[in-house]
Each structure stands twice: as structure tokens, then as C-alpha cells.
Image 1 (cartoon, helix red, strand yellow):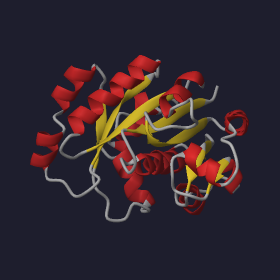
Image 2 (cartoon, rainbow, N blue to C red):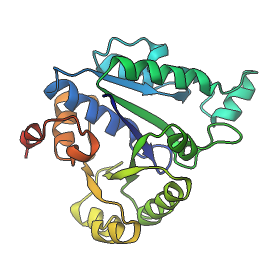
Image 3 (cartoon, helix red, strand yellow):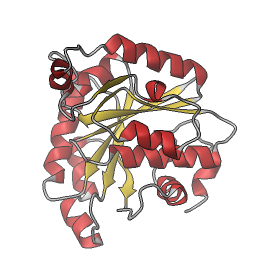
Length: 237
């Protein structure tokens, strides 16, 4: 049975792409007997789908990687209106269903934060709920991260999103003291009642597949990717 995981963030540039690439790099390096698919349901501007295409051997076209694309790097309903189009969620849904039938594990990268609009009526959180996508929330490590984590978890709980956990991400080089001060794990877990599954360090080269696989191995992969053999998670620990 296909397992699917949505990577959602607290906002734009929180680290969704880095986490998606880290999990994909680990999967392709250590789970070669099982197939992987990646899908960016909706993209505005350029970046993610092109990166996935260049980094990974997925045998997916750009349209399969990203079924809905708009040129302007704006909120989807605004970007769609600029092109005289609408956000055709049925196209994204069919693309996801097709990929799930072909692959053992599917990574779904969302856009913006959980509260970001998909259409004039729906947010990312609504989509995750309606499509029953197990979700991991990535929180950037910086001043204000605690409040961001709490508010996004509250939104997920309000809308009925199934959150597997939180991953913290060093969007810029961080000292251990800054990580402790800005994102105290015990406090975040106490206030959100959601487990923190690990920390992504800042990467000078976010396209280094070996390094991406290494940092992924330090996360709680049994929660994030249940199909992974638990023995393989000890490779880098």
C-alpha cells in the first residue's frame, strides 16, 4: 500500500524543499527496492519542480512533478487570475492518485504555510484534511519560531490535519545556543502536544545528495516514512 507524506511549513521559505530533498535522497540511497514519487501539487514561479527533476532519478515529467503551475510567484488564486485561469484542483488530485498507484512512497510538497490560500475558499490545511494527507510541519529556527509552531499546530488541529510531527530547520547558520533559545524542544512539545522529530542543520550546498541523506537519517524516520526498514535508520547514528 502506498504511503504518502505532505511536507508543510509555517510560511514561505521555511525549509519544505530541503526536507523533501533530504527524505528523497535517503529513500533513493537506502530503499532502492521500493519506488519513490515526488509531487509539488501547485507551484507559482520557478524552482522546486526543476530542482527535483535535476536531482533525482524519478522517471517523472515536469507535469507529473507539478501538475498545476503559474508563472507569477504569488498566492495561487492571484497568480491564476493574472493568467485568466482558475486553480484546477481536480488536475492535481488526479495526478496525485496516478502517482500513488505507481509508487510505494510519495512525498507531497505544499506551498507557503498551512494557512496559505490554494483557492479563494481553501487553504493548504484544508487540502491536507480533505485529501487525508499525513503531514509533517517544518518550522524555521529563528526568533518567533515558538509562536509560529503553536499557531500552525492550532490551525492543523482546528481543520483536522493529521500531523505526524514537527521538524526544525536552520534556515541560516545557527549556534547550538540559538537553537536552544529560539526553539526549545521541550517547550514546543509541551505547548503543541506534537513531537519534534529532529533538526535540519543549515547546508551550504542543499543539492549535496549524500549530505541530504545523512541529515535525513538523523530524523525520526519511522514516523515520517513508515515503509523504511527501521534497521536502516541507524546508518549514520
